[in-house]
Image (cartoon, rainbow, N blue to C red; front, side, top):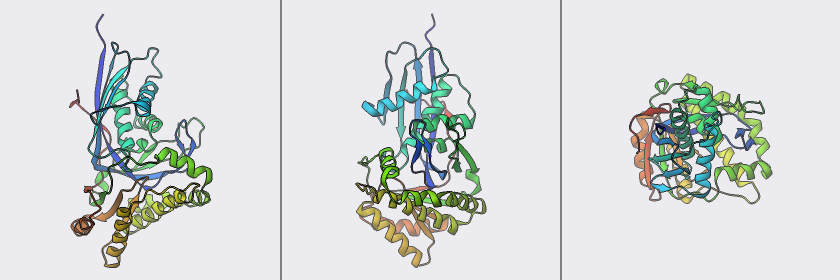
Length: 335
């Protein structure tokens, strides 16, 4: 009998939400309470190689050159089994995944990670899925991964069906629509956050008195953001993104017990952005579930903003990003 070896490698970029996803109506299927809008980033990515092999007796997973164990291993294994749901015989796999940025630090590493795992895994199984179906599957690993399947500017529609088949990503505009739009990603800490996004969302939904206000305003933010992207209205985009991020963090800070992702460096950068605006330089900040601050700006202002942020001694690194590509396959395998 010929040994079956099925291997594929995919690269997926991270994405940062301009209008955030925060809170699940179904935790098992990862269905959100609200729609969201994101920008796929060209310089933050994950490469993943998946090989299904009938000779394996367990899943072998290495992430950033460390053997995955416990919950991390379980999440990958569960996702690989989900990808094989239509197969009558389960096959174990070897997985190697490498990202060029810190994981679990508020930079959407799970988005690029599960998008790459989904594309590589399905291809290794001989499946040729539509973008919609890839997005639905990626969502089951990590909600934001549904958006990293696509490039440019993306909306993740919340959907309403109980089975989640209408909750997936749609491309608003390709990356070529607005290549000069820039995001300066500042790294404050490379340590894993103490409160995961999943735990934080659950706690917020349960007891933040501000969560209902979040839901009352979010769909308006989505529609205005889509319009700003289509019209390339930078000021409108920046204002919506900044306020939306503040509203999301307000829900976290008003839970019981409260949790705060901001660090001293985070606050310093936010204040510097406000100061730059007072000086006539249009820029805006956004933050996800972590201490890193992302600064939205125009290409012409990158160097000025970068030089100012570099002076803040709590900043460990700076990565300049622009709209990036969709998840894609490569023959450059990791093993």
